[in-house]
Length: 299
Ligand SMILES: Nc1ncnc2c1ncn2[C@@H]1O[C@H](COP(=O)(O)OP(=O)(O)O)[C@@H](O)[C@H]1O
Ligand SMILES: [Mg+2]
Image (cartoon, rainbow, N blue to C red; front, side, top):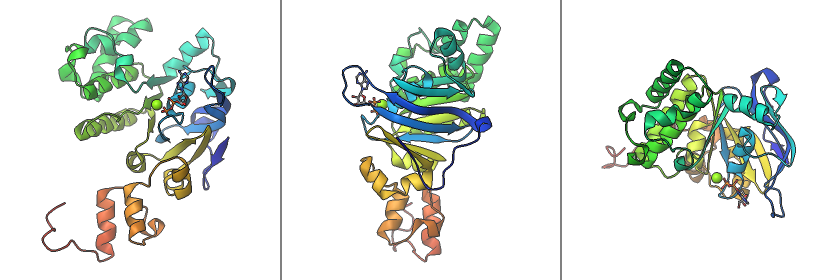
């Protein structure tokens, strides 16, 4: 099932990057469907965060969108047409849509960074100079130029995650599905990954990412898809993450700016739904909250 939150309406076909219609996904031997008649629409150029607790079905959802997991029933719409899961259909789909798995070591296997990023384009049968151009561009966008000749196994986890994203970018796909791109990264690694995501967007790529980090979703996303017990809710980031009941059912917490305003008895809607530290500081200053003496220089 799918719930539309608030006044959210799906984009027109022309603005649709990908969609699911009545999709059931399950694994052999399991009694319940991981996705139970799910319909959703990913808008072109919209930032969509897929949220849910561990085991809720985020990876399965992204794998269905990527074509890697074939639904037991229902349809994936890609490029305005139902996805054909035959070899030809999937090859065409993968040129539009790339999935970057949560663990980069599932995707990286070449000797060095350059060879890994060029693996997909080479397999497309592109001329070598085109492969080189795409690899150089992807390394540049992901700030990996200095690491181009490094063996992949000598990179940090965060660097390997960015190499996996670069490999997907080099395919020049329209849509990148990033499965928990910030999981396991330290704060600097998270910032680097978010810079990389912003660079992808400037590049015209539609980014969908899964996470259980509500604070990340709150500051990054336009739209949110919440997965709970096979059921999906889709809406604006405000309607989704401002819905305390939905968050509780999804075993997620409120984003910190909403929790803070709530604890002060302040209605987020009246304060412009602050998203960042700077937004919250501005709200508090406007309401006459001043830093406690001696603490002024802290932030
Ligand atoms: N290959 C698999 N075989 C059987 N069950 C699976 C497999 N992958 C995932 N599942 C089950 O499907 C459900 C959703 O998993 P997943 O999509 O990985 O969730 P998430 O990414 O949100 O943690 C879980 O109950 C999980 O145990
Ligand atoms: Mg997962």
